[in-house]
Image (cartoon, rainbow, N blue to C red; front, side, top):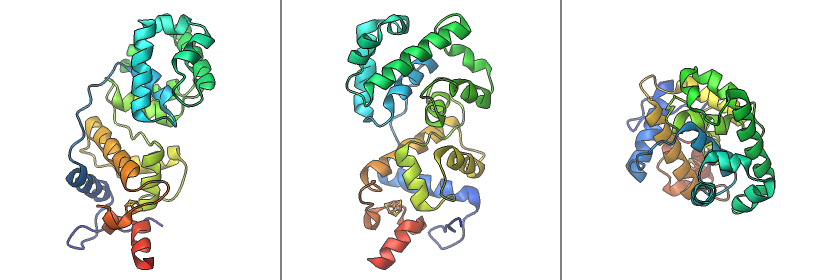
Length: 239
Ligand code: SF4
Protein backbone atom coordinates (compact mmCIF):
# COMPACT_ATOMS: atom_id res chain seq x y z
CA UNK A 1 0.00 0.00 0.00
CA UNK A 2 1.29 3.49 -0.82
CA UNK A 3 2.26 5.51 2.26
CA UNK A 4 0.17 8.56 2.97
CA UNK A 5 2.36 11.64 3.15
CA UNK A 6 1.63 14.88 4.97
CA UNK A 7 2.93 18.41 4.84
CA UNK A 8 4.45 20.18 7.84
CA UNK A 9 1.00 21.10 9.21
CA UNK A 10 -0.22 17.51 9.00
CA UNK A 11 -2.40 17.97 5.91
CA UNK A 12 -2.48 14.94 3.60
CA UNK A 13 -0.65 15.67 0.36
CA UNK A 14 -2.15 14.89 -3.04
CA UNK A 15 -0.22 12.35 -5.12
CA UNK A 16 1.80 14.93 -7.04
CA UNK A 17 2.45 16.88 -3.81
CA UNK A 18 4.57 14.06 -2.41
CA UNK A 19 7.40 14.46 -4.87
CA UNK A 20 7.21 18.26 -4.63
CA UNK A 21 7.55 18.14 -0.84
CA UNK A 22 10.42 15.66 -0.98
CA UNK A 23 12.18 17.85 -3.53
CA UNK A 24 11.69 20.95 -1.35
CA UNK A 25 13.10 19.24 1.76
CA UNK A 26 16.11 17.91 -0.13
CA UNK A 27 16.83 21.35 -1.59
CA UNK A 28 16.64 22.78 1.91
CA UNK A 29 19.16 20.20 3.19
CA UNK A 30 21.61 19.98 0.30
CA UNK A 31 21.09 23.19 -1.67
CA UNK A 32 20.56 23.31 -5.43
CA UNK A 33 22.73 20.88 -7.42
CA UNK A 34 25.39 22.37 -9.69
CA UNK A 35 23.66 23.17 -12.98
CA UNK A 36 24.53 20.46 -15.48
CA UNK A 37 26.14 21.41 -18.77
CA UNK A 38 24.45 18.76 -20.91
CA UNK A 39 26.59 16.62 -23.20
CA UNK A 40 25.63 15.51 -26.67
CA UNK A 41 23.56 12.28 -26.60
CA UNK A 42 26.42 10.02 -27.80
CA UNK A 43 28.85 11.22 -25.12
CA UNK A 44 26.15 10.79 -22.48
CA UNK A 45 25.41 7.29 -23.83
CA UNK A 46 29.09 6.32 -23.49
CA UNK A 47 29.27 7.75 -19.97
CA UNK A 48 26.08 6.01 -18.86
CA UNK A 49 27.09 2.66 -20.34
CA UNK A 50 30.31 2.79 -18.32
CA UNK A 51 28.81 4.14 -15.12
CA UNK A 52 26.91 1.18 -13.72
CA UNK A 53 28.26 0.12 -10.31
CA UNK A 54 31.09 2.62 -10.65
CA UNK A 55 31.63 5.81 -8.67
CA UNK A 56 30.64 9.00 -10.48
CA UNK A 57 34.14 10.56 -10.17
CA UNK A 58 35.75 7.40 -11.56
CA UNK A 59 33.43 7.31 -14.58
CA UNK A 60 34.03 11.01 -15.34
CA UNK A 61 37.79 10.42 -15.15
CA UNK A 62 37.55 7.40 -17.47
CA UNK A 63 35.47 9.31 -20.05
CA UNK A 64 37.99 12.18 -19.94
CA UNK A 65 40.79 9.65 -20.46
CA UNK A 66 38.94 8.08 -23.41
CA UNK A 67 38.62 11.51 -25.07
CA UNK A 68 42.31 12.18 -24.52
CA UNK A 69 43.44 8.75 -25.70
CA UNK A 70 41.21 8.32 -28.74
CA UNK A 71 40.41 11.89 -29.81
CA UNK A 72 37.06 11.21 -31.51
CA UNK A 73 34.49 8.53 -30.69
CA UNK A 74 35.09 6.98 -34.14
CA UNK A 75 38.62 6.10 -33.02
CA UNK A 76 37.20 4.50 -29.87
CA UNK A 77 34.80 2.47 -32.02
CA UNK A 78 37.64 1.32 -34.28
CA UNK A 79 40.04 0.44 -31.45
CA UNK A 80 40.56 -3.19 -30.52
CA UNK A 81 38.67 -4.69 -27.59
CA UNK A 82 41.94 -5.02 -25.72
CA UNK A 83 42.74 -1.30 -26.19
CA UNK A 84 39.26 -0.27 -25.01
CA UNK A 85 39.38 -2.65 -22.08
CA UNK A 86 42.72 -1.17 -20.99
CA UNK A 87 41.45 2.40 -21.34
CA UNK A 88 38.36 1.73 -19.21
CA UNK A 89 40.17 -0.46 -16.70
CA UNK A 90 39.07 1.66 -13.72
CA UNK A 91 35.32 1.03 -14.16
CA UNK A 92 33.69 -2.19 -12.98
CA UNK A 93 33.45 -5.13 -15.43
CA UNK A 94 35.80 -3.55 -18.04
CA UNK A 95 35.86 -6.65 -20.23
CA UNK A 96 32.08 -6.82 -20.54
CA UNK A 97 31.68 -3.04 -20.91
CA UNK A 98 34.39 -2.87 -23.62
CA UNK A 99 32.39 -5.39 -25.66
CA UNK A 100 29.10 -3.54 -25.09
CA UNK A 101 30.68 -0.20 -25.95
CA UNK A 102 32.39 -1.30 -29.13
CA UNK A 103 29.36 -3.33 -30.23
CA UNK A 104 26.99 -0.39 -29.63
CA UNK A 105 29.19 2.16 -31.42
CA UNK A 106 29.54 -0.16 -34.42
CA UNK A 107 25.80 -0.84 -34.49
CA UNK A 108 24.86 2.85 -34.27
CA UNK A 109 27.18 3.49 -37.24
CA UNK A 110 25.71 0.59 -39.19
CA UNK A 111 22.13 1.73 -38.60
CA UNK A 112 22.57 5.47 -39.04
CA UNK A 113 25.46 5.59 -41.50
CA UNK A 114 27.72 7.53 -39.15
CA UNK A 115 28.53 7.66 -35.47
CA UNK A 116 26.16 10.14 -33.84
CA UNK A 117 23.01 10.09 -31.76
CA UNK A 118 22.05 13.70 -32.56
CA UNK A 119 19.31 12.44 -34.92
CA UNK A 120 17.38 11.17 -31.86
CA UNK A 121 16.29 14.77 -31.24
CA UNK A 122 13.66 14.23 -33.95
CA UNK A 123 12.08 11.23 -32.18
CA UNK A 124 9.47 10.96 -29.42
CA UNK A 125 10.92 10.17 -25.99
CA UNK A 126 9.47 6.63 -25.80
CA UNK A 127 10.83 5.86 -29.27
CA UNK A 128 14.30 7.10 -28.32
CA UNK A 129 14.32 4.93 -25.21
CA UNK A 130 13.12 1.85 -27.08
CA UNK A 131 15.76 2.45 -29.76
CA UNK A 132 18.58 2.77 -27.23
CA UNK A 133 17.46 -0.22 -25.19
CA UNK A 134 18.04 -2.53 -28.15
CA UNK A 135 21.78 -2.32 -27.52
CA UNK A 136 23.50 -4.83 -25.23
CA UNK A 137 23.91 -3.57 -21.68
CA UNK A 138 21.46 -0.69 -22.22
CA UNK A 139 18.46 -0.70 -19.89
CA UNK A 140 16.02 1.95 -18.65
CA UNK A 141 18.66 3.58 -16.42
CA UNK A 142 20.98 4.28 -19.35
CA UNK A 143 18.20 5.29 -21.74
CA UNK A 144 16.68 7.52 -19.03
CA UNK A 145 20.04 9.20 -18.46
CA UNK A 146 20.55 9.83 -22.17
CA UNK A 147 17.13 11.39 -22.73
CA UNK A 148 17.13 13.43 -19.51
CA UNK A 149 20.77 14.48 -18.92
CA UNK A 150 21.97 15.07 -22.49
CA UNK A 151 21.09 17.94 -24.82
CA UNK A 152 17.93 15.96 -25.68
CA UNK A 153 16.61 17.19 -22.29
CA UNK A 154 13.40 15.14 -22.20
CA UNK A 155 11.30 14.39 -19.14
CA UNK A 156 12.41 11.09 -17.57
CA UNK A 157 13.39 9.78 -14.16
CA UNK A 158 16.73 8.04 -14.21
CA UNK A 159 16.58 5.57 -11.34
CA UNK A 160 20.01 4.41 -10.31
CA UNK A 161 20.50 2.09 -7.33
CA UNK A 162 20.48 5.01 -4.83
CA UNK A 163 17.28 6.49 -6.26
CA UNK A 164 15.52 3.14 -6.32
CA UNK A 165 16.49 2.30 -2.73
CA UNK A 166 15.32 5.69 -1.40
CA UNK A 167 12.02 5.56 -3.29
CA UNK A 168 11.35 2.05 -2.01
CA UNK A 169 12.13 2.95 1.59
CA UNK A 170 9.95 6.04 1.35
CA UNK A 171 7.11 3.77 0.23
CA UNK A 172 6.27 6.12 -2.63
CA UNK A 173 5.20 3.28 -4.88
CA UNK A 174 4.69 -0.44 -4.24
CA UNK A 175 8.04 -2.28 -4.28
CA UNK A 176 8.97 -3.24 -7.84
CA UNK A 177 11.90 -3.27 -10.27
CA UNK A 178 13.34 -0.01 -11.64
CA UNK A 179 11.33 0.16 -14.90
CA UNK A 180 8.00 -0.44 -13.13
CA UNK A 181 8.92 2.00 -10.35
CA UNK A 182 9.83 4.66 -12.91
CA UNK A 183 6.53 4.14 -14.72
CA UNK A 184 4.60 4.52 -11.45
CA UNK A 185 6.58 7.57 -10.35
CA UNK A 186 6.06 9.27 -13.70
CA UNK A 187 2.32 9.14 -13.00
CA UNK A 188 2.78 11.28 -9.86
CA UNK A 189 5.42 13.68 -11.15
CA UNK A 190 3.85 17.17 -11.11
CA UNK A 191 2.87 18.41 -14.58
CA UNK A 192 4.94 21.53 -14.00
CA UNK A 193 8.25 19.68 -13.58
CA UNK A 194 10.68 20.32 -16.40
CA UNK A 195 13.37 17.93 -17.61
CA UNK A 196 15.91 20.07 -15.73
CA UNK A 197 13.96 19.76 -12.49
CA UNK A 198 13.78 15.99 -12.90
CA UNK A 199 17.55 15.96 -13.36
CA UNK A 200 17.97 18.04 -10.17
CA UNK A 201 15.64 15.68 -8.36
CA UNK A 202 17.68 12.68 -9.49
CA UNK A 203 20.84 14.34 -8.16
CA UNK A 204 19.27 15.32 -4.83
CA UNK A 205 17.83 11.86 -4.17
CA UNK A 206 21.13 10.29 -5.19
CA UNK A 207 22.95 12.53 -2.71
CA UNK A 208 20.56 11.44 0.03
CA UNK A 209 21.22 7.80 -0.92
CA UNK A 210 24.98 8.31 -0.85
CA UNK A 211 25.13 10.19 2.43
CA UNK A 212 22.11 9.42 4.63
CA UNK A 213 19.86 6.73 3.19
CA UNK A 214 22.83 4.46 2.53
CA UNK A 215 22.55 0.80 1.60
CA UNK A 216 24.27 -0.41 4.74
CA UNK A 217 22.67 1.85 7.33
CA UNK A 218 19.95 4.44 6.76
CA UNK A 219 20.46 7.32 9.21
CA UNK A 220 16.77 8.06 9.67
CA UNK A 221 17.20 10.23 12.75
CA UNK A 222 19.07 12.87 10.75
CA UNK A 223 17.15 12.45 7.51
CA UNK A 224 15.14 15.44 6.23
CA UNK A 225 12.52 13.04 4.85
CA UNK A 226 11.85 11.07 8.01
CA UNK A 227 8.42 12.64 8.50
CA UNK A 228 7.39 11.42 5.07
CA UNK A 229 9.01 8.02 5.12
CA UNK A 230 7.36 4.68 5.72
CA UNK A 231 10.63 2.93 6.67
CA UNK A 232 11.89 5.90 8.70
CA UNK A 233 8.70 6.12 10.78
CA UNK A 234 9.02 2.40 11.59
CA UNK A 235 12.66 2.83 12.57
CA UNK A 236 11.83 5.74 14.90
CA UNK A 237 9.16 3.70 16.68
CA UNK A 238 11.53 0.74 17.14
CA UNK A 239 14.48 2.93 18.21
S1 SF4 B 1 13.91 8.30 6.78
FE1 SF4 B 1 15.47 6.68 6.71
S2 SF4 B 1 14.75 5.19 5.22
FE2 SF4 B 1 13.56 7.08 4.94
S3 SF4 B 1 14.61 8.17 3.31
FE3 SF4 B 1 15.41 8.93 5.24
S4 SF4 B 1 17.21 7.63 5.73
FE4 SF4 B 1 16.01 6.64 4.11
